[in-house]
Image 1 (cartoon, rainbow, N blue to C red):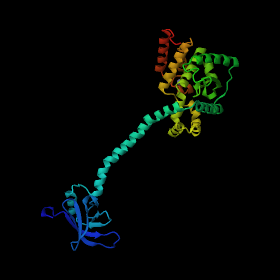
Image 2 (cartoon, protein in one colour):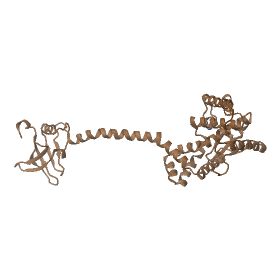
Image 3 (tube, rainbow, N blue to C red):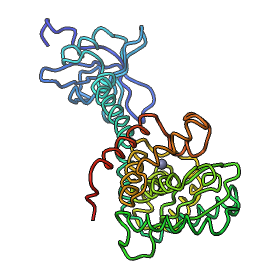
Image 4 (cartoon, rainbow, N blue to C red):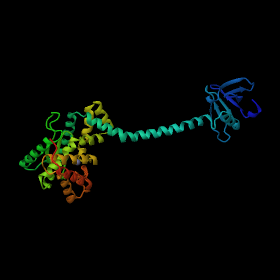
Length: 362
Ligand SMILES: [Zn+2]
């Protein structure tokens, strides 16, 4: 060692693993990055690369511990010498702290990535899973979900319709005519795609909703509220639109949770369906998204136009609800099919556009 790096040696005590007590020793930083420990007879007892050492922080005058890979410890009160050795080796801190400092930016990046991943999962992966699940859902599962939901709703909310039978029959005939004109009517060959059910809504009041298999329910209260049958058909066509676009299934899957979705996509249909069935009655409280409402409105306007009925009937129905209850009312139909003046206006504009041109559909 030259005089210029006379700070590169420190006197202290040498502790060997498994040996009680300690002996006087000297720690020397050799040129080339090696650190050597010599005992009081100048015999070399350890020689390792500096990078292999763990050196404790400088805290007041507490002795520094320099740990060797084999568990030996060199202990010294010569803090300045240890710092000088570290400095000469290009470390600003000690080994342990040095490692942490090197790790911390990576830790922060990792944590940020984890947060971004979770956010991304909810933003993108769940909607993607929902789409896959909707696509992968066999008709039998849609049917089971719908039957389950209907059973629950009949137990907790509805009672049998009190509409006269010939009134029901008349509406059902009109409904079936509409359904026959719907875009996907007659596809897949698994029976009628839409079927109409009448129920007394009771506390639920004027309402209509659609289940994933095409079951559509209208309450006596809604039938009684509507001043003309076009309005009732406009609402029912809107519900057909929700079926056609699989909105109810999407709604259910969105609340079913990732586990049920993964089970469903993975083919564990029994357990997944059970999970989703539990949520079936949630269809009466979950609101459709604004986009879903717009799609269902468009479906209603186009279908009504095709059937030669008033295409603006759905807009007139929402006008009626607005005038009678206010769009912000607690009315169940309005909370599950959120309406805005903009939406009503959009439906009316589309109806006007269609009325102004000849029907181009087959
Ligand atoms: Zn709707």
